[in-house]
Structures are given as C-alpha cells and as structure tokens.
Image (cartoon, rainbow, N blue to C red):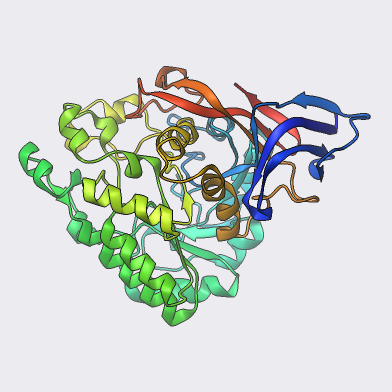
Length: 427
C-alpha cells in the first residue's frame, strides 16, 4: 500500500472529538493527516461509502499464550484473530510460561509482535513474581521494557498487604493495577456460578459475593493509596455496585465487562448439556447479574468492553465439565455480538459502543490511539452495520475453537481493519 491513504465517503464516529458525521479520513505515513474533504493526490483511495469509520478498537484483556503455550495460541495467530475481529491493538496478559514478570520476557513478546504481529501488542506485566501473590515484581524494569499495566490475571492477589504495596509501587510508574476480583477460598473447586442451576447440575458453585468482596477491597485500597485499579471482567451486580460507589467517591477505579457476561447466563450450562465452551472464570452468572451489567454499561460504571480471549487446545475442553479448562475465545466474535445484541437491541448507541471499544480503553491505560484526531496513529476500524455474520469457530484465525456462540447469526461486523495506515483485514 501507499503511505498515503484516503478513506472516502464513510460515516466517521469518533467519541474523543464528539464526531458523528460523513467525513473523509486522510492517513499519511502512519498517522491521521486530516478529517474532511482532502486531496486524493498521491493517495490510495478506499471507498467506504455506507460504512462506519472509527478509531481503532483496543482489547485490554487478551491471552496470546506465547511464550510457552504455542499449542493454544501464538502472537501471530492471536493478532490475526484480532485484526479479523476489528481490533487494531491488544493488551497481552502475563500468564505465559514463564510468567511475564521480568523485562526479558516483555522484550521477547514485543520482538515477536514486531516480527509476526498483525496488530499492535501491549504487554501487561505480572503484579507479583511468578504471579504467586507474594513478592512484588520489578515494575520499573517492566515499564521501561514496554509493559502498560500489571496484573496477576487469573490469580487474584489474596493478600491485602501485597495488593496495597502493588498499588503504591505501581503509582510511582503511572501503571494501572488490573485485578481478577475473586475471593480464592470461596471459588476453590468451583466450575460455574453458585445458584439453583449449579445445585441442579451437581456442580460446585462460585458465589457472586466472592467477586464483590475483592472489588470492595480493591476500591478501598485504591482510595487509601491513590493508585489506579482496573477491575477485569466484571460479572456481578454486587461488583458493579462496588465500582459505582467507588467512582462516586472519586476513587481511581475503572472496570471492563465481556460480551459473554453481558449476553449469556448460567442457565446455558444446563441448556447446552454441559458444553465446556460455557465454562469460564468468572463464570456465567444469573439473569439479574446480566441485567445489572447492562445497566452498568449504560450508566458509565463499566468503562470498557474487553474479550478475555482465552484460547485452549481441544483436549483442554474435551473432557468432563469440572475438569475442563476455564475460558473462551472472543476476538473474532465480540464486535459483531456488540453491534447486534447491544446497539441493535438499543442497549447503547453506536458512539457509546465505539467509546467502550476504543476511546475508553486508550484512556484507561494511557495508550496511543482511541481517536482520529490529526497526528494520532492511523489505526482505524471500519464497520459494516448491515454485514451478515454467521459465527463458525472452525473458520477462526485463532487456534482456539472454544466459543459458545457457534452458529449464532448476527447483523453487523468489522469490514476492514487498518494499523498504521496499512490494511490488515478486509471482510
């Protein structure tokens, strides 16, 4: 492609600038040059008439598995999946093997992303060494190497003392601490949400109170320290209310929610006949929790939509429900699901969805992008609101096939993804 690209005739939706109108977008040398009528001289013209042009979508919660579990996913396959799903950047969780708790591993991830990545990759470092919850990792080294946040991902930091120290130390480097909010002794041995469905199926349940307890703790400690805490994959009404109260007090707390927690409930475990693609952590919750998440999405309690993309090998899921690995893939389904079931259903409007997938993720972690303002990175997601999408896991770019959305018919999806002004996906 030419260095100069003109996206012509599209509807530009950019919440960062309050824009929702027909405009041309000129990209040049990897940055946004101008919005509005621009000369096509020397530019490759791409006709996007009838399509929606947005600042590139950013997924704050992705498992790329490399290094160590390339049988599940690689940086190459995971970023191709991201591009196919309309994402121009992903934040890579640290639960690799070995854990990304030191600068050398961070640099390895970035080197691989530069060599093989289809989209931008922002590594997240570990809160504690080995993600064991005991000894704080070296945040200065991680930050210098390229980490944009710290998290122990699926291992919640059980010790309040350690989590307090993490918030204090991270504050010195302007890093956000991302926490998987779960009281580990309550969740131990659980396969799904605690409630009537778990009782009926004879499976041990993970109570919603366990999430809320740790969200409350994290909000209190963020208030105490002045640090920044981000609640990963919020899944309960009680957790959402804790975030809402923290925000009202001015605490530096943000939160994300996933499409699967907003669209599915624990009843699907029964209805699917113990399909292990319905097993994730946090688990699918009750209908009242799902409705509370949608309200939190509407009122601003939830800042971002993230996928928690967690690919697994077939053998990890093809077993008894209580032995199966937690997690589903989400990069290639999230945008279509949100357009059909959130925008299409009137839960949020399109500008709000773009903010949740682009502008807000960039703000939460201080990342480049999230805007089409002149001088910003030429990362662009183009949407086709009329595109018909049939979810077929067998055709995913990801190595993972573990999705509960297989067979769903959706309206709307990504039409094109550009990173640095270069087209990396077209539908």
